Figure (cartoon, rainbow, N blue to C red):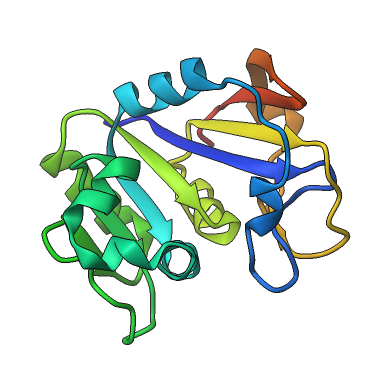
Amino acid sequence: MPKVTYFTATSLDGYIADENGSLEWLFETPHGDDESSWGRLMAESAALVMGGTTYRWMIDHDPEMLTGPEKWREYYDERPVWVFTHATDLPEVQGTQVRFVQGDVKPVYDEIATTVDGGIWLVGGGDLVGQFDDAGLLDEVVAGICPVTLGAGAPLLPRRITSKRMSVIDVLQTGEQVQIRYRIARP
């Protein structure tokens, strides 16, 4: 069964997007050189899963992604991507392996497990990650804590995961960001 890792940046007060759904704050914070953790994530991830809001923000933030697969591949290579959404108006990135899905995460996880050989990167958002945890499918959370507070917005993970299920695997400082990797014991 593929390892499922939620890898994301978060504000110090625990938000992954501001109250308008924007990630612009992230590009304004110093990160340093996090190539080691990014490289590890990309080496371990054979597939990506994200929510429709995350996908829409990425396309809106960089409309060049819609011009063809080259720009998309700069970010995600040729990995297949499953986008959970109820929206019917999301644009497709031609020439990529983006699949729009909805419903329970377990059947999609099973499909991914039979499709790829490697781990799954949960890009976000937090509620989708919570659904993976609810289904007993979350293995790791890697949170890059940025030196900024947002006061409100989309929470990192709007679920309760007790400390009994979490153990620190690694802590890494990159510039002003601190990255904490937690192992999550499946219930």
